[in-house]
Length: 167
Image (cartoon, rainbow, N blue to C red; front, top):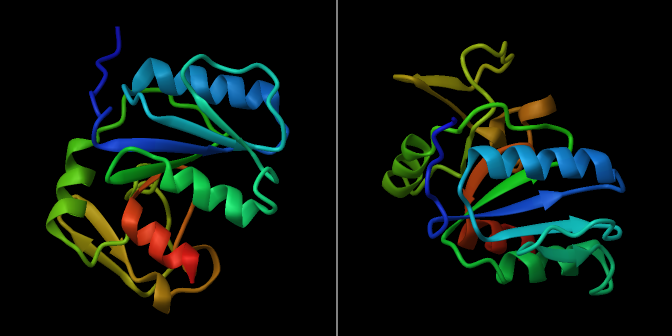
């Protein structure tokens, strides 16, 4: 059986879904099998088959996606938020201790991706190796790395996300 990491008090999960109920089901089931987070929210155009204990935010319930997202993140219970998207599945437990240590110890770090690693060919001149981690300055990057947020498996400080999104 897979070893889960208990993160229920430190990280909340926000999943973005776009009218793909079977993909969302696969994402949630695989996530629940591999990670122990109890504060889970889903932003979706409509609710098909609700999972017990998960909060749902319908995209335009608050007048716009922006307002719905702000309400969703405001109502998360943790200091950190993990963004997820129904485009992927979890195939093994995530190693969460290192990302949390880095985010707690380095206030200038915006987020920590659980997907990107040395196995991915990153084409940016602003990539810096830090032992087993890679760092990139998104403000100096272009293309895929020229933006602050990605939604496929990155952990961020909740307050920083709120600050950036409100502006």
